Image (cartoon, rainbow, N blue to C red; front, side):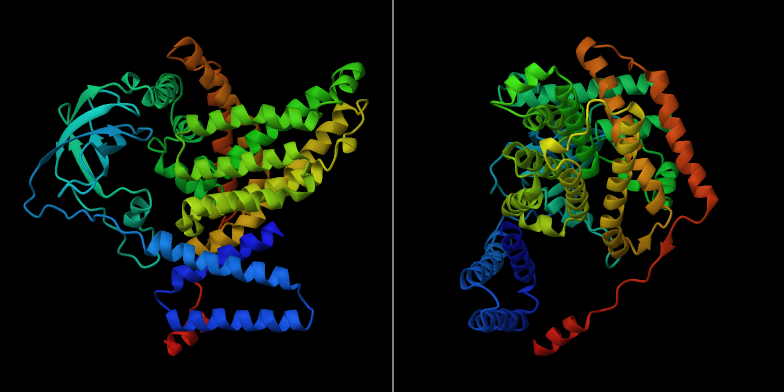
Length: 507
């Protein structure tokens, strides 16, 4: 019942987001739904408790959106009209993003929230930086603060809204060695020392990659391992866009899901290969599936935080961990109950995530992978015999991974078509091969290589020649696929719905 209640709550969030535009029409819609459920209950088509619970969740969604989003008041930052430079001091509260000639950071101002002319969170761009900075460091800079500006194209990416949803109220840019003054390391604070250390690990991997890899492999490696997209070539991005594989350039739900899948299957298979006497003794307290679920938590969580722990990545992590919890509890056939719970947690934290494209695509990807897990590992007894040949096991793996990749691609294609007015016909084929290669080969190998600089302090990636060869081969394969045929088709924007017109008339 949880998935249906989550669906009702989600519909309530949608209705709540549209109430300011269509108050009368949507009020009439809610009244009609209540009457319809009452009629169905009288005719015994639906249980009274189910109808009541569903409608209550619908109303809760409406109320929660109005209270949490529409009713949220904050101090609005007003841009300085005199173009005056201001000196601000604050702490970097997010992993620092690095590009070839700049650093991007989110600085939390030390002043009070209501202090006039002082925004709380500032997105600072430091061009031609003198030194590296990390999360938790305290800095001082002098710059002109500006209000984030959005897109002028209807339906395009709204940068201002994107920053607003992260709580960022102002943007600033500084240039040169004196642009930012370093005040204190994050290691001096007990709380920030942990995040500072993780960000330094990211910096050591980045430095080793810069010393070991060349473009375009460098940009792809940094994008999928530490979440830095500033080194990606524009031409490379275009190639992946045409072939429908652009989602592979950044860390998404499919990356985390595939890493979790690889660790889960590997640990489970290793446990099941233990001597029979050991398995019998362990089965009294724990199963191979539970051991694999617990063992998967650490590497997946470490990957998410090493990748910068961006909002979209953390949401994907929540969904993956909830799926592993379902595996631990033995609810293999109730994966979607676990994902419904994860969606509720995410939406209670941030109702506006409902309209976030990255969340929608990541959620669909994780749902497809969870469905594949439910189908592939329904029970402990379904494990193939230990005497199965390596060829048979490899063929089963190839088949299952191909099915999973196809499911992820088909699930996300309608949303890609809706948002970007483009369907990559070639992507329906290339993703079946590219997604497993990326998630099951390049990402794990890159993570293992990244352990080298972290553990030894080396400035060179281990296996860099192999990484360069494999990534170059992967990119060349994508480029070759693009040359065979036109990889995408352009779709017209969706027409205005008659329902919207009807609601406008009522208003």
